[in-house]
Length: 337
Image (cartoon, rainbow, N blue to C red; front, side, top):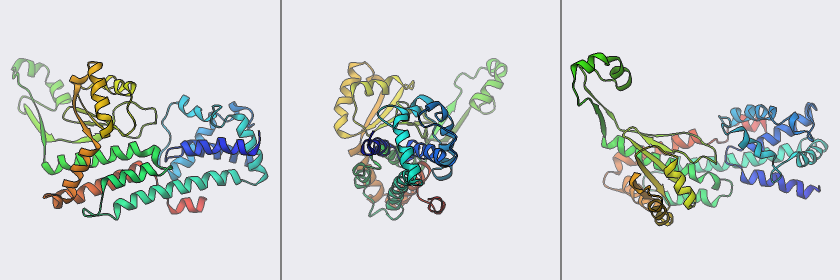
């Protein structure tokens, strides 16, 4: 295998990596182990398949702030023939040893660039105000950037969360739980159930709390499940990728909620509605919200009549969620590099 082919395999993994860069980091740490410890055989996958996850996690936790939670099978895709199988790692190892770590440096340079790109995305929010922030331009900046385009779905999710959670908070929406069948015998007999499960009792037959939405959290690229859920009974699926009949069917079948809200691109709405009707799932869909509608709502929130109450809150939530979801450059990484 020549050097060009070897490099192409590595570049493919780097190009396809999401912003957390788990797979490229794992390659770098395998090569580092081979160069410094010399206790693995790059031609024998079993000498580093499982241990290399720990080597990667040590770096990821230090600079990314989290570790991969994907299935072992998904993580092992790194060693498939179209990625970096042992034969490719053997060649990378030769180059890396002869150059005293140049391949490791190449990978971590790519990580540094990716972190810098994410820092720029965060800065765009932190430096913006209600008058200057443009939602469509913000989303497009991720779509256009090859290093960030694979993470645009998460950015879209954060954009939705920031708007929904802010409006629920500003509108001071409350939801309630109450016992309609005030049966003294049942309440007495199952008082421990009503108190522990519902927070209700004979003296407190109803309670009210703020309506909220919650992000499910970081998920891997293959996840088809829930993106957000609300404590008022709505499940929310957010898709900025192209929808197919299979994707739409998965959206409906993977969520057990009776009411589902789907947020998608304007161009996907007709496909979505058509397939849902075809599979008889439309009755579970409460509404379909398009990116165009989100843009209109953001315009109202940032520059409408109530912008003084809403605008800054949305931008702050947007920045906070980006900080939590995505890593960015820090002084410690510069020292490590």
